[in-house]
Length: 514
Image (cartoon, helix red, strand yellow):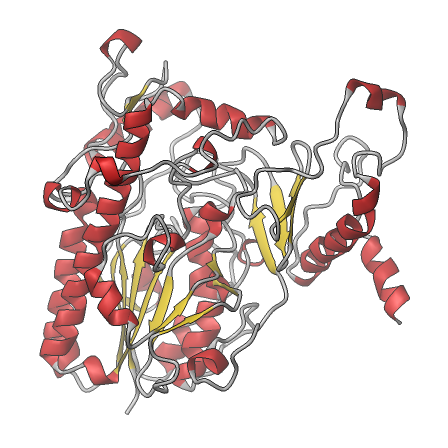
């Protein structure tokens, strides 16, 4: 009998919220119970800290440079409206194997192609938004549409004197209130209603195996959980992170400008934001629990694989930042990933795996564990050896992240090893962190600029002498990944080729190893 698959993907949930002993562990009784029969991946990351690129990577097993989605596909300045023509989805292999595919909730992979056009049965999926031109009137139309759809951006911002609790004043932009309370945030309960009915109904009685994808919008900002979940947390128990007051003087200017927006919030409001965020995570856990109950009551639990994960993380106060985006910090990329599979060995159930994994690994894993083959090659790595207990170590020696900015503002490539993290910023100075001694990413080892440096020459003068070999080896990794994943980020023009090492160091490394 083929295994059914239930995928529950939240939006903007930080990985730490599901890890025991972490200060940001949310109260998630349903997920905690589920974890006892599942494998929890403590080092799971998204390849891009953005909704659409990350979800496209999930559904294709490819990096953004391969599928072509770089920012949100429904925005005015989107680079693309969906994956490149001809991009394959792993879902086609399930359809060929006779599965029924159903989706409820957030799609956010293409604004030009609906899931139903790819063979999915749509239970409740938001229609694509028509793109608006980058004009003043286009922005006004978009703002009005967002007001109607989300009820979270008001008609006009308050003045500083009239600022309300949690509000961030942005002159000339629609009103933004960082947190609040809603009984039905983002209509996530309606999304789960449809998914629950599917499990209890046709999925429980049909003769075909099924794969159900449920995509909720929480705990995406603004953080607006129902009151009963907010009541689970006492504000006096909420603490700001140790790196909250990081002045970021050694980091890109754009990081500080982003943080400055949030400096309007008082210390109490910052802690309230964390409280609301954790409460939102608890609400998502409640919704997940409803689906687990539906599986149990329909008799499908024993033959259904379940995945709990998110598309990207949230800063949650790290370095004074909130939401997600350009700043390259761990919390924007780190995501929860908990997987159970029928027949999983008892020695794997209830474990926490510390192998580095990526969202691009989910497609290969689903196919491998289901005994299916992809229609075209994918870049992810199957987690089957970890889930079956056949392998307990690392499956990769590095992580590679790609971002073409927050809606085109800033381009980054990041490589992370067990010790080092190199952030290649094509808009500012690079960043290097020694994660062994600086896990909070407070000290950028490449920040050495002084006025005296203006008289120096040479491409390496920004790198401390003792780090030349480290940085060169990390740049070789960056360019190797660019070559491997068709990442066309290099332009040799003198005004744009500002990296300390260019792509031909890959050739030098290959010649040295030959």
